[in-house]
Amino acid sequence: MPPPSSPVPSPRWVIPNFILKVEDLNHPGATIFFDNVKPRQALEDAVTASYKWMYTQLTSPTHVKKITLVLRSFEGVAYTFGTHTDKEIHFSLDHIKNSESHARNEILGVLTHEVVHCYQYNAKDTCPGGLVEGIADFVRLHAGFVPSHWRPSCGDKWDAGYDTTAYFLDWIEKRYGEGTVRKINGSMRDSRYSEKVFKDATGLGVEKLWQMYCENLTEKS
Ligand SMILES: [Zn+2]
Image (cartoon, rainbow, N blue to C red):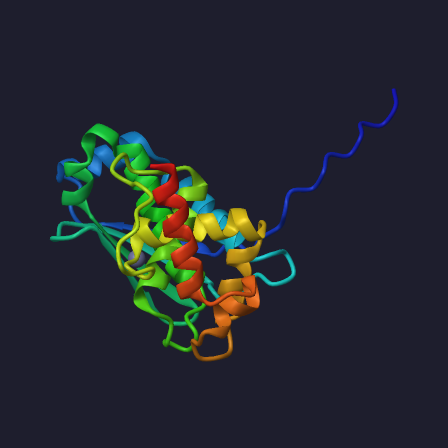
C-alpha cells in the first residue's frame, strides 16, 4: 500500500493550561453550562480563534501560561483580569441562566470575547476602551457566535465598542483585506495609541473610515 498522504498540518498555537472553578454547582447556570459545552474544548477553541484573527504563526504571543475560568453568581456578564502570564475570567452563572434559550451560542461567544482580552495588545494601556471591546467582539463575530440582537449600526462614535465597533472592523477587514485587523492589533504592541494605528493599516484615518462606513450603511438601508 502506498503511504498515506500526509495531511496539511494545522497551525500549532501555544495552548495554555486551563483551570475551571465552579463556586456553586447547585446554581441552575452551572447545570446549563455543563449541558451545553465541554469546558476544555470551549476554552481551547476560544484561544485558537483569538490567535487566528489577531496573529499569524510568526507573530502569536506565547506569554499566557494559564487561564482560570471561574463560574460564580454576580451581576453582569463576565470580566477578565490577571498578570502577563496568568489570566482569570469570571463568568456569571446568573447570566448563563438568563441566556438559557440560546445558552451554547452565548457561552461560547462570551468565552471567546473574554479570551481575546487575554491575548490582545492594548497600546500600553492607551487603546480606546471601545476598540478593545470592538476587537474582542470582532473575533466573536468571526468565530460565529453572533447574538441575535447584533446589527451593524452607525452612531456618532466609531469606538462605541461591542457590536458597533466589531461590525465597523469587519467592514475594514473586508475592504482592506484579511489581516487588516491583525495589523491594527499588532501595531498596538509596543507603542502608545495614535492615529497611525488605522493609517498604517488602511492608509486612512479612523474618522474618515467611519464616515465611509456610515455612508455605505445608509446606502444599503
Ligand atoms: Zn470585554
